[in-house]
Length: 557
Image (cartoon, rainbow, N blue to C red; front, side, top):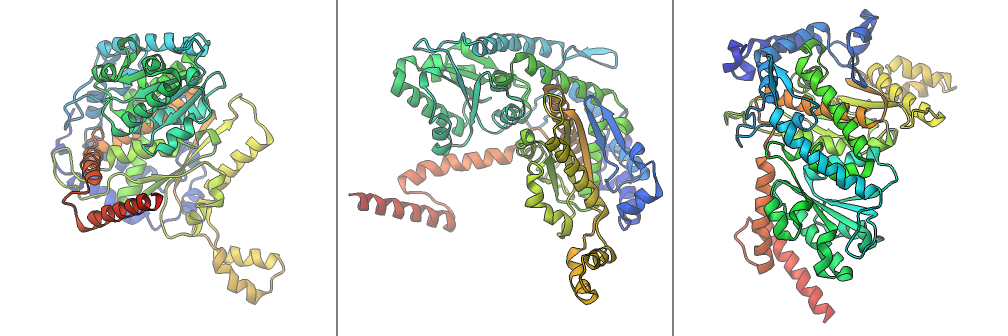
């Protein structure tokens, strides 16, 4: 049922006003006080689901906060949005497309109000996945042969954005040693050269991953790959060393990739949500098709939970609402994602695109300016490395910085070494210390205990104080496996979509990105020709570049 308040702007809703009033009452209170008042706080603010446990007890919320946030979700008809997405309605309103990434990993049709949904899409995906399994099994068994008769031993994915970040992140997290899989995204020639510098062209296969098959960076790298292969194998034999994952098979064929070597990408999935599709082909090569399907199954588990669980027990919804609380009411501008697992080191970069490209918007779905903050700046790196770099800002800086700690408890083989124990202990210690802080009295007593005299201790004590009260969530994973990684990534996908819906922005387009690409296409030919009507800064930069290149040519002659 659509709530009657959905016609109001977000900040006009009674639920928003109630949250503002509640924030004024709660924000002066410290997390230490909230824990002291409620010894059962963890039990009330922790939620297990699939292979994860989501502990948000260190967020600056109470049960009253959650009640207000859920009322906001209800006022924005979040239930209706979830239903519309799951049934394939065109929720990407600016492009008149569905956003059906859940169909990429669904095991069977969803039943919405007793009616099956997504049956046709699931059949389409299944056919592509069967073709993926055939080629992946052939590659990993050593039976995929290149033009010279040598087995393919190396895969290089050529893609950028959603055609690179997801597969790259997951391959780094999960890859075994059966096949060597590498990734090239940057148009900078250095990345391509570094990726292929120790490879044998006869044993190398390139996957051109591009939904449109028009992306400048990807096509430039595909041409570099063709030239590199042709220099050794001959130009007429390069086709045997390419595959494509695309929605534009015609363009891939025009490039020289045979139709039976093209894996279609549905129109109804956006790039940053396409990890689960044929864009995941390099990932499947890196981990095997069985593991890839386990990844899909983990995501499907989270999808089922998201679609069916009540908001008060719904992990993506609660995660999204807490993010809205931090951003729109507590005033946070960023979200730090700190995975305590080296193999999850690329997760923050993946989530940057997922979150900031989806919800970095300044107008509503109706085209009206928003009067509230939307997507946070997402950043972070793997712990414990960050502890020796930017954690200082968490402890003693001037920014409110919500943090997601992501902690696999066991190593990938299920074991726990002494180093793994220390890694987990560091993660828990960071979240506890950032919550608790250190008072001036505690700092002074600590200095006195080291033998420092009282006067010197009083001088130094302010430098040791930490305010604490930094909000954080901890996501425990039993171990980093394909299934738990699927749980995790789908959790963040749905969190972002929920926030976008409540903020009334379209999470599924990216016209700002397209504008930057268009500008680059306009500048390049004019730069090469030495002409162009640009702003004074751009003209001066182009002139400097031209002068430098002219001088270099003169010097070389």
